[in-house]
Length: 29
Image (tube, rainbow, N blue to C red; front, side, top):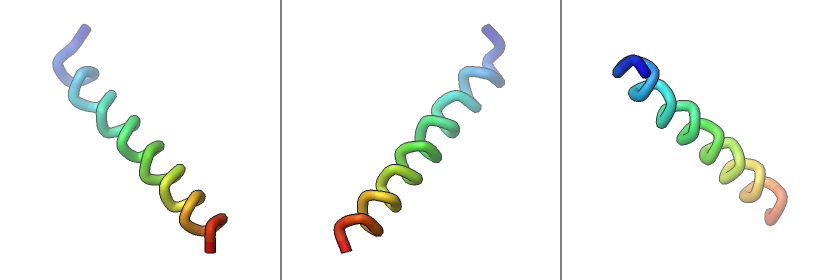
C-alpha cells in the first residue's frame, strides 16, 4: 500500500460521513 493511498482513504471516509451527517440533518428538519 502506498502512503499516498493511506492518506487519501481517510479523506474519502470523512467526506462520506459528512454527506451522511448533512443528509440526516436535512431529513430531521
